[in-house]
Length: 359
Image 1 (cartoon, rainbow, N blue to C red):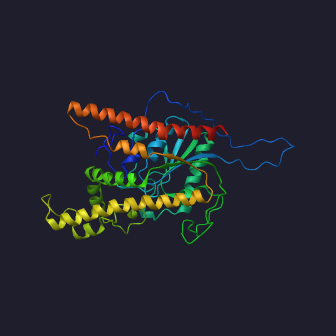
Image 2 (cartoon, rainbow, N blue to C red):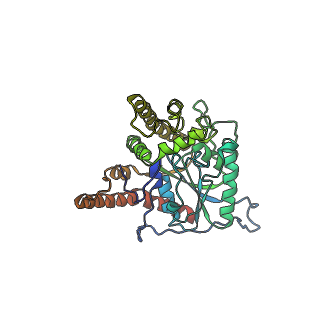
Image 3 (tube, one colour):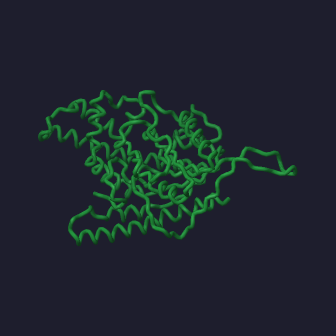
């Protein structure tokens, strides 16, 4: 299924992260951006000055829910914005298709930080390391009077980054721990939670896996394994697609088969790996939603925007066709999708960010 997000051919696992932003000149909300001041001045009658908290916007949600699309949409409207990646697989170099890194072309000139910068050979990027490097990026962005947008589905990274006091020895998302999530934050945060009904999202993700494979993910993984890597690779070896194909490539090493037709046994092993990718992608989305609900239950002020209807409409859009009647029908449905995305997701998000920046 080719989705209506843009005319770009996507190459990835969570392809709805690569939706091109909209460019309609008029929206209901007029964006206002007040460049943040780092110093608060008080007269002598007030209490002693305390450190001013920098303002950041955090776009969060389950995998495949459109976080990257929304972040580009916002960054192209709030033009003093830069994006910091908080996806724990996208921080590594390599496997750009499998980990769904947004291409330079699709970034539309928006500066991105911590995207494909860590070498997997140097070991796994811990939440503590992310807190340090992302914190430095935020300080740099704010020092240039720009707005940081933190974007990604790794809630452990987000928690580590924004809490005032972070204890790396505690997994706050451990189900056996109560009241482990801190509400004392070191930044003034605007949390945007892009939500999609789980059944709709899972249907979307499963179709997405098929498109991902058509776009070259299998070939990328084949080269990854040919280079001597495997699921035991630190960090990036956990990216969905790597462990699922591990047994397949052990049995059928890259380069075998000569490009001819596969026998039924090999085809079955391939289809089993694909089935596992689909299942594990949906399980990842469920786990991420569970963590989000724990943050919300602990008192984090998450501003929910519902993208469910936009995704339902998106999946109704037919693939591109040379048939003129089908072209017109697809164009009409694509227009409908744009209207729903703007109404349900983009405009509410812009209102939330505007209020936050004006406070």
